[in-house]
Length: 309
Image (tube, rainbow, N blue to C red; front, side):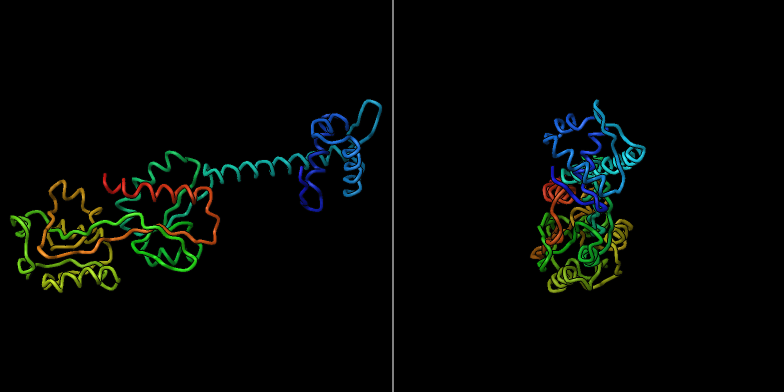
């Protein structure tokens, strides 16, 4: 039984003391703890010397607690019970069954994909407290680097020292038009010329990925009339549904709209839009255990399935 120091007292001595007090016998305590009786006697004498008070009265029928021993037993029990509870809590945490998990997530991912994955995880681990913070991908990455979240889901491929990352989803972005738009009624593929003059709803042109998207459109001669620029994908989607223009949106954000006929996908000949990447990140210098590992595994396994459904 390893001994640990806590407030100058040896935890093994405290456990022996509790056992002697409860059995009223050095020999029975030694048997239960698989120790030699002289070891028990020696350690109890050492404990009495450490706290400066006699704890036991020895008699022919065993030992009894002194008033000081009875008082000390209350605190010894409380302390040992708290330590035992702490040990069990750590076991539960390491097994992934309890604890707190803080997840940073790009807003669009939290809106359209994450709920399906977390629903299954939370049902399986009801005692894990999951906290989600949302924002733009670069802001979420900053939260991870500042240790304010345990895991991060971002719309980036990240290659940065000290950060472990894995791409969990590559999804297409789609050029979409609202129901009733003249281009939505077009049969077959469109050309870039067909898009000329159509109003476009833009999302965050200053980010590298979306700048690349709009560059592809411009090179193809498609984007000639930016109508509005917004800072949230959900806002772009809402504007499309309101009939205010065309937009390029991730497939996951418009799946239901396409199925219900509220939007229509436009196929433009020769227009190749790059896929959008989602990555899960963690700090490489933090322990990869408990809920952190379980949620990481859930995200890696669940993203493709969630997207397909």
